[in-house]
Image (cartoon, rainbow, N blue to C red):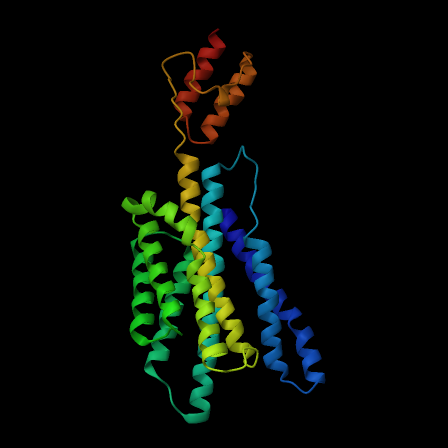
Length: 302
């Protein structure tokens, strides 16, 4: 748990640092007559996305004697979920900015836009928490249903991506489906994000005849949201790796003077080496403290 919160604090400091670095492109843009605030926003997001990639996609390693493989995989999965939550928070802020501009210029606030922002906030919070439970699944269902029925998607490809995302959420959160869904998730995890951005390109850059680079705000937001979908896919895949790491069969016979599995005990017959091997089993959760004490007593009596 402590590794998760340390990483969250690191991410927040990274966001602040990114905001500071965003002043560099903003200053250059201002000298050329462009909007300082707008280009600061661009620069901040680019630096922030880069730092999230560096901090959260890396494999966090700790002392193997203090942290088990299961804990490492679980923390890594929560880092993917936290990164996705940050991405969707950025999208939420951008949507709020759009609502503000619409109200400022034409004095109109669309209820479906406000509802979409509310759903994005809920999704972001649950992703930051990073728990795969029934409540999180309900949030994914709410998000998918709202996007579909409110028309908050740019085309049929994105609609397919939303349905895939919902299907992966159901398969990877419900315990009865996790084993079957793991293989499919490894193949399709990137498709919701890819289809989200590809749908935007086809609708606005080609079919709509608009300049793809003419609206950097929309381009960046679609990239950020696609990144959020990719992080969710990686979060779902982390469950399969955790399942594999914890399902290795190791038979321990505590009423005998041996342990099945030479990978843990080894061939060294010294008492000190045996105690270290038994202690590693305790640290990994494969042996209880009571069993360890019994083994220790048996070794000392020899």
